[in-house]
Image 1 (cartoon, one colour):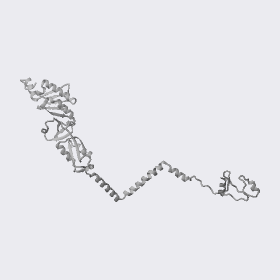
Image 2 (tube, rainbow, N blue to C red):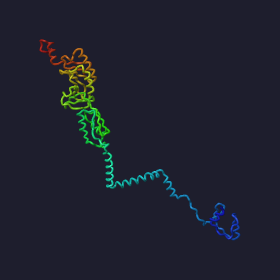
Image 3 (cartoon, rainbow, N blue to C red):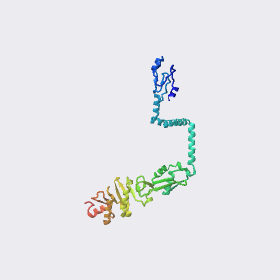
Length: 337
């Protein structure tokens, strides 16, 4: 090691070489040799001031800060994801800025889509309607005008279902595309239970009071009970309960009339009426029928039975019966008491 240092380190020529590594400066002084200041390295040799400087491996301050900045997670994420996204966005913007390129790409996509949608396996050729009558099926075909064959991709099944359920006679409907190019429509048709007479005409209603159809004459549906009056369509369930309770009256029953949008009047033949209360009308009608079964009350000359006050039922006789009653009571009078 000592020999290598002697080879590579610059050594100043001396008039008198050193005899050993521990040579003293006093020997040089006595011989007239003047030594210049030297720097001791490690005790094994010396180096003069004019020796070359060693390169410091540590980075500069600017380089160190740049390296630390590059180690920041946000900066690394931005360089890995943000820069490619910006470049892709810039490239896309430059591409879409040309109208000719936009039109060419749009036409290419439209051609591919049409080639897929117009394949035979995706074409719908006919529509089948189940659960609907002849008239309703014809109405459905009118409100859903489809020009077959049509691609199943061009059919809005939800919209078709909404259009069909918007028809008055339709209670519910389901629409689907069956294999083989068939548009299947399953319809649950409303069942009419009463006929509602209004000033505008005669209508058929279901159990919920929903409108089904218009009748030109009452004779068209004599099998359905009749209701009348404003607001009667909102209380069809109550009217059906009254009709069920009045079955013992048979053919004498003509219908129900909604009075003041609050209560019902049961109308019988010969102009008789049973005026029912606002609350619990079915129980009041049953009381009237029980009395009628025992005493034939409704078979007499009774114009109306007022049950609006449950504690005090009231009977009103016909005009002829009243006059006859006064005549029997005062045979010699003028009909006055």
